Image (cartoon, rainbow, N blue to C red):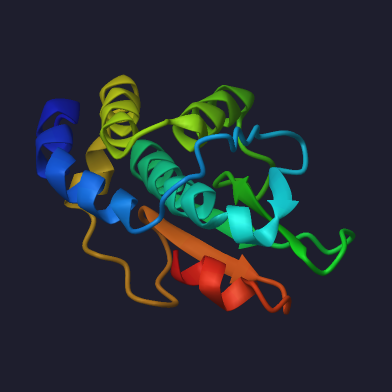
Length: 163
């Protein structure tokens, strides 16, 4: 399957993204920035960031045709904090260019900006041809694009995982 056909198979519906994003509003003054430790802050601020990280890492999984991950943890911070870190298919830190994309997506001021940023990311990093040909990955399946989510035992973990 060509890259064009793969991209068409995963066409983005901006209205659906905007509606989903609206369920995870970002405080106007909150400007998260992705660093070596991912995003870290007071857990009550992270819903919008975790939701947007989910969008980004799904795009990364599609672009690479492989599994990527989201880890919700801030193990060395105070209990009221939490964080989210994104993991590349190699199991290593997210590629630096994608860290910049994570920051841009997390800082989008409106739901329509979230959809616009995601659209730009998908246009610049279209799904790998094998991504469209791969069947939906079942839990425990090997190969193909998918997102693996992990979290620590902090009280905010289940809520953030649901975002």
